[in-house]
Length: 173
Picture (cartoon, one colour):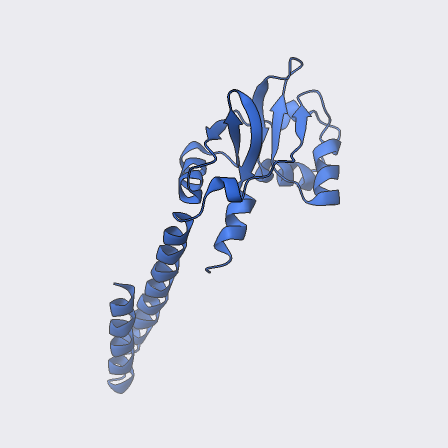
């Protein structure tokens, strides 16, 4: 469909130029770019459905305590680029996550003296390591999660975040 869309767009473009109908030229350019984007998105979706969470999950990740100050995740982000975190309470029970958008907002507002608890999201989601990256991506989007837990018998085996999926999609964009 995207190839046909691009062919039609080229035909509109040529017709518009030859007949001095410049609004048709603009429409043709829009159709061409949208068809190209649709093709790229289709390829990415197709490839994400062939890749598995276990191949992109991180086994090393940082747990933050709700009483930690924001200076800790900000420092970790500056040192090693880690930007999505799991947050636990005093009993080491998972109480939330801190997605990268929250961390970047805290960094922007210079909130290093605030508690992690003030920046926590309660969107805690799990996924099986044998699921596809497409399933992980869809779960993140529908549940509003920036990071997913990969658990086995109640124990956290690893995490996967939006950045890992973005790295995978960069191969096809």
